[in-house]
Length: 307
View 1 (tube, rainbow, N blue to C red):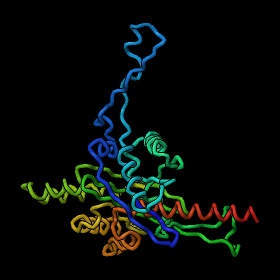
View 2 (view 1 turned 45 degrees about the vertical axis):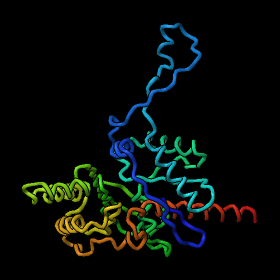
View 3 (view 1 turned 90 degrees about the horizontal axis):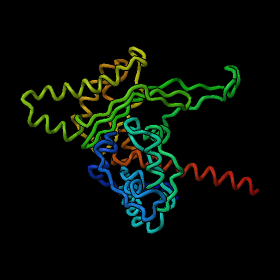
View 4 (view 1 turned 90 degrees about the vertical axis):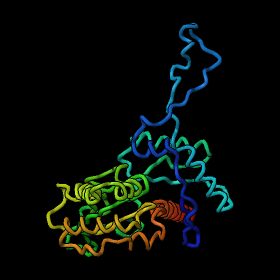
């Protein structure tokens, strides 16, 4: 969790490891989430035979996000020494979760805490790109090329990687005129930092570990939607293990192969590191900046209305 302060600086507050239920949820494995029994209602308007099953939804899946969001909000309030009134939440990769269900879970968890979530759940990269000044901004529709106000930002290709102890997630993004689209994605709990370390330490053929990692990254970067011999505009590497040199070395090699017109040596953490010294906070910092900017714009609009 991060906060954007009025003086223009950031404060990174906490990163908390979720329990097994939370990890299963984030990896899209809802079948691994423990069900919780509900207490039967005292009053049932039906017959005893029917009422023995009352309420009819006697088993429901617990909200896996509630405990960790509660801890994060408590940590923020303790650090800032004030109540937290709103929280913006992002995830990577949302593609592994039912988006509507996840958004409802976030909203429910924060509503129970009395915190406004604006009823939204966004993707880390959609917030990180504009926070880093990478998103283009074209002219208004129907502006002719000979108009002095006309300008066009060419399409860009981004490669985003989140590397944690438990998972590797990666995506190839296309951006033009501010609109962003993920054209291919990868999510694996077999290629996370801990799993790769274990593979290197125990496998008889250690080269197979690296080849499997390369093949996974290659499968994302060779998506049919990208142009052959194209260039890559930016590489966004974030997550708690994003500074792992073995991962970065492999990433440089793969992107050097797939984007020969780009400088493979430029694949580093410079973009994200300049924004978030600890890459685990890159997403939360971006959301904090977006939220603060939106609040500033709203304040300006209200001030103009008052004038």
